[in-house]
Image (cartoon, rainbow, N blue to C red):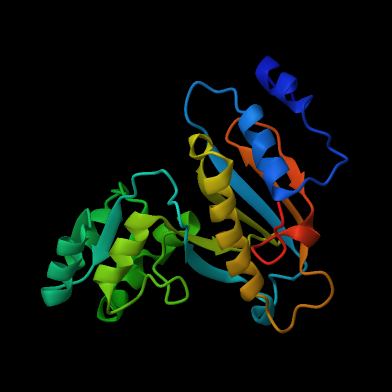
Length: 235
């Protein structure tokens, strides 16, 4: 794969054979961010599990202490008092069967979907549309709930969902380069703490196989997987 001049220059600052501390890695991410826009910082975690087995799934959600730096558009499937509560909590779009029809027609201008349990009969029809985009409401992620107001507030505050892909890797944003190392570390540790807590009982051997951070346009920086999360972070 051919990279641009800025990427090549940035990559020279990173020792690909080295495993950095979280602080060192995030400092490097800032140094290697050369784009003219405020790049997103992403974490990539390879786990020692097999996502093909139901008892080794890793999925959940966590509210990042400093948010994601993104203006999150929230769509809520609810009616009656719950619809009113969602609107008052700041939901961008609220509806029931009409919202389902709108999405079936191709409308997708939202980042998070939340639903009250009684609406899942309708929302289930959108599985093939929302599922592949990671937008399908889920009880595990806290996006199928009677407390839609709380779910909306958390989504707006920077709640992110983490889940394994087919390669047993979790990919998650933890903020913007402009946040600075301290805030990014707080968000990183919150995510890693949640992933570590979600370790399946069926998982054997080393749980976190590898971990890396990178900005949108920058090179990946590898972090020592034995020293991640709040308990291990001594940076």
